[in-house]
Every structure is written in C-alpha cells, then in structure tokens.
Length: 450
Ligand code: FCB
Image (cartoon, rainbow, N blue to C red):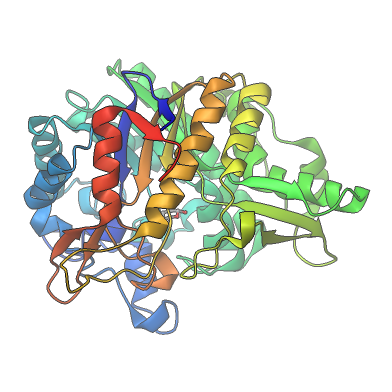
C-alpha cells in the first residue's frame, strides 16, 4: 500500500485550550474570565452549558498527561488561562495558578512530551474587559507584562510560545458579531481589537527577545481556504476582501509591516487608529507560524455584511460534519499552504489545529468508532504532505483536539476529541482515531488508503 513518509523530526501532537478543558473556574485564587461571565449569562451558550467543570483537567492533569503518553504523542499544545495566573489581568500573580502550569510542564517533560504554549486562547480576564478589553490600546502593555511573567516562570523549560490563538475570532466574533465572549456587537471596537491584538503580539515578541529567553515565539492564525464562488469580478473581489479581513490583517502587518490598503479603504469609517511606530512593533520577525485549518469558504458578493461578501462551505464530494455543518475539503489545506509559501516567504509552519466533530458515543464493545474522524485526519495529512512535497516548510501537526471539550457557544454538543469524555463521570476513553494516530506517529507515515 502506498505510504507518505514524514521527516524524522516532525512534531506530532494534539491541542487543547485552558477554558475548554480545565474547569475549576473559581478555584485556588483564579480570577473571572470573559468566558466565565459570558457562559454564566443566560442564552449565550447552547443548552446553558458552561466551562465551570469542563473536563476537570485542572484536577486530573497527571492522568491526562499519562494518557497522552500512552497515545504516543510527541507534542502537546495547551494554553495558559491569563486570569488563573494574574486574576485581575495585571498586578499580582497568583502562586497557585502558576504552580499548576509548572506542574503541567514538568509532567509533560517527564513523559517525553514537548510543550507548545499559547498565551491567549480567548479567556481574557474580565477585569480587563471592564476597561474595554482588546478594544483598549493599553492592553498591548498589559499583555506583554503577562507574557513576561510566563516567560520568567516557564522559560527554563518551555521553548515554544505562541502569543494569540485566532485573533480574528477574538476580534470579529467577540466584538463584531458578539456570538462569542465578551459578546459585543460593534464593528469599530472589533477593528480596534484587531490592531490591539497585533500590537500586543508585537510587544510580547519584543519582551521575549529583550529578555533573552531560549526558544521560539510565533502566533497561531485561523487560515482557512477562500475561493470565489464564481469567476465574476464581483465574487472575485468579495473573496479578496473577505480573505484580507480574516487573514491579511494579521499576516501582512507581521510579515510585510503594513495593513492591506484596499481593505482599509473599504472599512474607512470604522478603521482603527494607527500610531507612528506601531507597524515596527508588530513586524518583529517571528520564529514560526501556527496555522489552524478546518474548511474552505466559497465567497460571493453580497450587499450585506462589513466586507460585502457571503461565505458558504465548500464540500468535497458532499462531505460535511453533521455536528458543526462545516464542509470538508482537504485540498483546501494544500491551497492555503501554497499561498503562505509564495506570498509570505515560506516561514517554518506548524499545523496547530485540524480536526472534526463527530457525534461519538462508547459502543457496547467498549470502543468509540469514529471512522469519520480517522478519514478526515488521513485526508488532511495527505493534503499536508502534498504541500510539503511542493516545498512548504512544515514542522509539525497538532490534532484538535486531544479530548472532547467545551466548544464555545456550542457547549459540549460537538465532540472534537480523539479521546471521548463522558461528561457525567468524566471518564476518558480513547477513540479508534487515537489508536490510528498512534501508529501514524510510531511509523512516521500515513498510508494513502484506509
Ligand atoms: C478553533 C478554536 C478551538 C476550537 C476549534 C474547533 O477555532 O481555536 O478552540 O474551538 O476551533
């Protein structure tokens, strides 16, 4: 059977985020986050779910690391809860919160698993939101101070840092549509948030460089694939705008030191103020790009919406996840990677998230038969390999997610894990896809057929 071989040093891992798995939302001195506040507000989350307990990872961390080891993972991407380590967002740190991440890192290293740490996976301290959150320019400094606390505490053992996870979602879904925390619907705040997220990223990179820490720092962006729905000039232009609004607003400042001009012209009335020197701060060189990838959008012109575009999912052979409605199109991964290679200088890149939601349950035979997930992962790894053969500089791949968890506004319904979590008993059961992934890691290869 034909197989695709990956390079010897390829980093195979799985990813999670603090709010989605930790629980212990108000224990050991942790401060409130915007997601605590949002999920405690009636009507915001499906079925009224909250992350109060989630997977109870805060209390089951050693067991979870042992599970990762048993599945053969080489890397683990997790995030730090900012309000767990600095309850008010700035000022005093919380020793017990810092201890938790200390222990997690030690446990991972003892298990031979490489830690990949994200500083902002959305759970902003509520105390900072009370001062405007990402819409307040001062946050760039608050974030850099928090980043420094973490570099100082974990920098002797952690050598891979990402500043933000999907800043587009923070800005546009948190402050634009308001579907996610903090639930604000105001485009002018959303565009300010974009710029302040960029600035905060740049300030954290500066703090990392000036502190002389060992290791690498980068950012994680959601880089889905955008295709015009038709060759009509209106659809092509709408596609360009949608892509610029979601991707170029983060990629261009970092890699090219400027914002996309056509887009800024389009959003003029709500464009964020940019001060002299800002672009120099943002365009500090980074060591790697993290890319989350799930789907392809077909984009057409629409008279509504901030970028006058409408997006629907492309489905290869009608393939879709029933739990999220996200279309599946593996070739889209190869296409985005080609764009990053040709337009952004082919930076060292990690797929920091990729995966799918399936309505899994434990069968009478004690197994979880998630064939859909295995097929999704296989096809995406083949698409990734295609990009590597074409010259993309891919260093590793992280499945979203290690285990089923709190999927933001959709609550616990979509199950993205390679490990099933019974939310009554919190029992973990590796799904069949986890065993499949284990042998991928062991052999360092993916077979072309099932
Ligand atoms: C990404 C998020 C991650 C998870 C997956 C399904 O947008 O970064 O936390 O929710 O989607």
